Length: 149
Length: 182
Ligand SMILES: [Zn+2]
Image 1 (tube, rainbow over the protein chains, first blue to last red):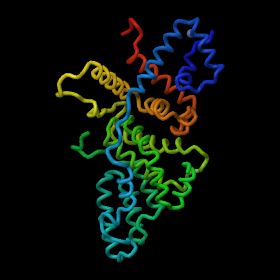
Image 2: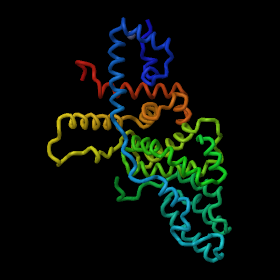
Image 3: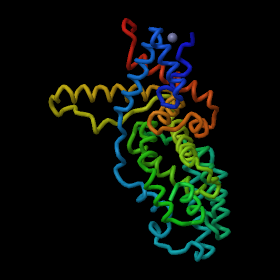
Image 4: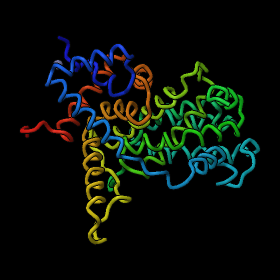
């Protein structure tokens, strides 16, 4: 006689075909242990449905749109590429310092990419943005001291 | 327009298509992150990060009709690195402000029972190790198949099954104890 434990999650998720469902029902009709296990599991599964997630406080698009167009909205500069070389170099220095500070212990990669890119006048090309993304995702800084959650 | 069609347009730089996609999925993504982090605020930040990654990597998406598991792969990666950053292993503080009635006087019995159940569920879910919680959340709340969960979590279907079995085992003991046990 096959107990039902190996097919329990499939049963709960409703992904079993009819033959498999009938097999489980037939087994539970004769096996009290599996009958209890199934009843308790179904109780848990249905209770989990009583935990609705709260709705987001504001539409996600607001923040996303701002993040997609940071230059126009935050700095009031229309086009980074029109920056003069000295301004770009100064910006690169600031970015390098700030990021180096934030990413204590992991500064070189990100700061280097940003610095090189800004000096080259292409500020955060697609590739650099994606490298930066990857670096930040894999090597994020630890919360600063005093930062509590 | 389906998700694959939207993704093709997003890869071509159409911002309107991206906005449509965000609006279509934001509630699911936010709910996922809320259940993984227990915090509405963190969930909002992680939701935004998830979509920004979708946007940044739209060019590498292959339109094979499996957008949801690709989306949750990104969301899951972010949730896991969030947990690592916070050095939290299996511990989540759920914001229960919407349900918290402390200091507001007695509530009707039915409401209290409902709130107790919710809090008990939140505690039980929060107590699961992150990968068990992720597999369970994707299965129970997002209706992903075992195969899609495996793709989203970068693991095998067998491993997903084992995560689900262990999660369910823990939840049964906490939420539906056997008569006479514990
Ligand atoms: Zn049995």
